[in-house]
Each structure stands twice: as structure tokens, then as C-alpha cells.
Image 1 (tube, one colour):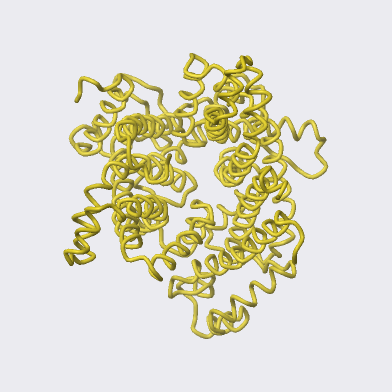
Image 2 (tube, rainbow over the protein chains, first blue to last red):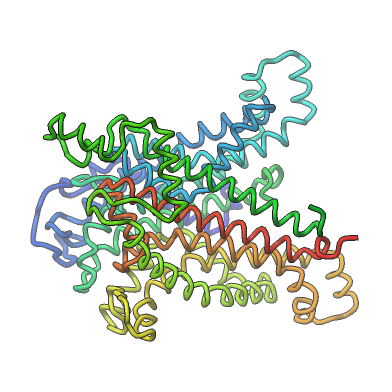
Length: 272
Length: 320
């Protein structure tokens, strides 16, 4: 299988793995603790501070490494939440049908009629900005897209012979969803998983950049852009580094997701 | 009603849109009510005395049930009264007016550049399908959908405002500013927005034209021996206009949202920055009002997109 993998996807795979390793082993890799002030403000890159120091004189590389952990952890958690919620509800809607499907679908239409960032900001204006709240808000808002995809995919599968057979055997809704539909819906959902993860990373970064995501002294990459943005006008590129990291992570995952999507030919759930 | 089916379809779509807008207003209102604490407590802070709280609640009408407050709020908005900001005690509508104008100014000029450019690049990608131009365009599209707005924005500032000093790094616009200076001020934020929406538009334009290229009449044209360019110009493009208009409108809706982050990057005095500032200050009336306006613009553009595709569909235009 690995032999036929295109170069671009391989690059994406390697970088994605690299980011994950950095995130998981952050405390062992980072040369300095995340909050420790080690030098002057915005010192340039040097042998001692590979990426220089930030707006308070903390080691930028160490903050980047811890930032990877926070960014990736929140995005993974939000994606997991949106997938579990979206796919279970989407499958259930397709299998149960009737009023349940109508109510769920109209509710999703309504949520999707407001741009996610705008509605997220509206809700966050009254909620405390803690990490669990962020995960909940991001996960729930994004589950609408997963719901649409999984309902479409499940509706395709639901009319197939083996599902009819299971229904005639008298299997319950739970069996139909988890034993008949889920295994057959996995491949389109897996490539969607990558895209949703990227979306979560970008959404979280945007929120933190606007000062409404992860709160100091903790910082994800979006928050680090915010911390260091004042330096830009003095020609100090510290804010560009976390921004570039977000882009690199998003592009690598995108390359992997693209490859998986191209490998799954049938059953694209209305994606054409 | 009778009339032509096309008018009926459009009327239906508009009615649905208005219904959706009301539902959305209820959702936005409900979204700011999910916490047990109320506005009075957040204005006065923790040291508030119970009497002060009670007085403020009375003054703001917080003792009424939620649905009464919702209809009062909605009634106000329908008559042009957006309420008063909690933090500044200023009328929201008068503060918002010029900012809405600034945001539309930025979005409009970005769209003026983005739309023809996206269509041109989309056409080029189809004309030289699978060639180097097509590959470069799709590579660029993939990259720019993965780039956060602030990466593009700060790169532009870093190179064009700080290093080369061609443009100001902070895009201030004010009333009575000469038009050309205003344009110069929005070049960088406009470019950032452009790069954000261009990729989507291009990709979808390309897909729309390719879709048409696979139809039977294009094959006929090919077999007739028409050149590739003529096929695109005479057969594919006219039929792809409807999906392209749709794409453009959807992306304009996207642009209206992208504006929030871009305005904060360039400290542009528009609606997005106003929204973000007041979310941080937990100024709920402002957030509700601005959120509703953003949602309304987004929904309206979606309606226009649908109407455009109804109008451009020849099967509906010439009913038999």
C-alpha cells in the first residue's frame, strides 16, 4: 500500500506525524518551560533560542512546542465530539426517518444558516472562555456538517439489500446503525475527518487570534500570533512563525485527506 | 397568483429566506440566553448590591420572560432601533452605521477584483486542463484554503508595509477621506481577503465549467471540429454562467465572514472589529445586533445566489 503513495501525500503524512509527535512529547522536547522568561523581549534567532524570544522574553521555540500540544489537543477533542455527535445523529436520522429526521435536518439547516465564526462569537460573548467550553462550542457547531454528510451516506446504504435483510431479521436500530451502516460508511467519513480537523485548527486559531479562544498564560498558536503581532510593524517576524505552523499543519493534513479521498471511489455521500 | 412559474419560484425563495431570518434572529437571541447569569450582573460586576442589581434589571426590563424580551428586541430592530450598548451607553445604530459602510466598501472592492480574476483563472485551468497552469492553480487553491487569514495578512504587512513601505500597516479610513487615499488604505486588507476567497471561487468555477464540458452538446461541438477555445466560449461558458453566479454569491457570503478576522489584523474600522471588541467586553446587545446583521447579509447573498441560478436556467425561463 505504501508503495503507491504519491510523493505529496507522503510529505503530508511525514509532517502530520511530526506535528503529532511534538504535541505528545512536548514537555520532553521543549528546551525551556512554557511560561519562563529567559531573555530580552523579541531577541532574534540564535543558537540559544532557535526561534528567538517572544513579546515577554519567553523562548519562542518552547512556546511553539507547547502551543502545538494545546492546538492539536483542542482540535482533536472538538473533531472527535463533532464526529461522534454528527455521525450518530446523521445515521439515526437516515435509519429512523419520519419526524426525527425532519426536526434534526431543519435544526441543522438553521444552525448552518449563520456563519460558524459569527455564531461562535455570539455564544462566546456570554460563556466563560475555558478549554472545555471551547471544545463543546467548536464540536457542536461543526457537527452540523458531519451530520449532513453521514445522513446522506447512510441514506444511500440504508436501501441496500443487506440492510433490508437485517431489518427483516428483526435487528434493532442500534444494530443497523453500528453493525450494518457504520462499517460501510467509514471510508467517506475518514477523509472528511481530516477536513474537519483542519477546520477545527483554523477555527480555534481564529478564535484565539481574536482573543476569544485559549486564554493567557496558556497559548495555542493562534494566541501566540496575537501575543506577538505588535512586533510586526517593527519588522520582527515572531508572529509569523506560529501562523506559518498553523498553515503547515493544515496543508499536511489536507494532503493526507486528499489522498484518502482519492482512494475511496464509491459512496461519496453526494460529494460527486 | 398565476403569473410565470419563474416569478412564483423566486417569491417562494424570498419567503423562505425571510422565514429563515426570523428563525435565525430567535437562535441568536437564544444563544445569548444560555447562561443563568444576566446582563445586569455582568455590568455591575461581583461587588454589586442586591438593590442596585434589582434597579438595573428593572431599568433594562430583564424581569420580563425571555419571549417578551425577544419580541421587544425584534420589534426594535424592525423599526431600526438596535438598542443601546452596555459598555458605552451609546446608541448602537448610530455607531454601527459608518462601520457597516466601511465593511461594505472593503468587501465591494475586493469582490470587484476577485470575481473577474476567479472566472478568468477558472477558465484558464479548464482550457489547459491537467497541464502545468491547471496544476499550479489547483496547488495554489489547496494552499490558500489551508492558510489562516492572519498568516496571509501579516505576511502582507511584513513585506509590503514594513519592509517595502508601499502601504500603511494600519488601514485607517475616516469620513471625508479622499477616495483614492481610501482605496490605497484598503489595498492590503483587500488583497488578504482576495487571497482567502479567490481559491474557492476558482476551484468551483473550474468544477462548474468541467461539469458542462462533459455534456452531450459539448461532445457534438468537439465532433463538429470546433477549437477548444470556441467550445468554451460559445458552448460551455454560457451554460456554466448559472453555476458560476451561484459560486460567486456563495463566496461573497464567505467574504463577509472573512472580513471579521481581516479587519482585526489591519485595525480597519469596520463591523467585524466592532463585533470582536464587544464580544470581549461581553456587551450582549451589540453582539446580538452585529451578529444578526452578519447573518442577514449572509442569508441574503444565499438567496440572491439561488435567484440567480433560477433566472439563468433556460428551462425555467422558457416554460412550455
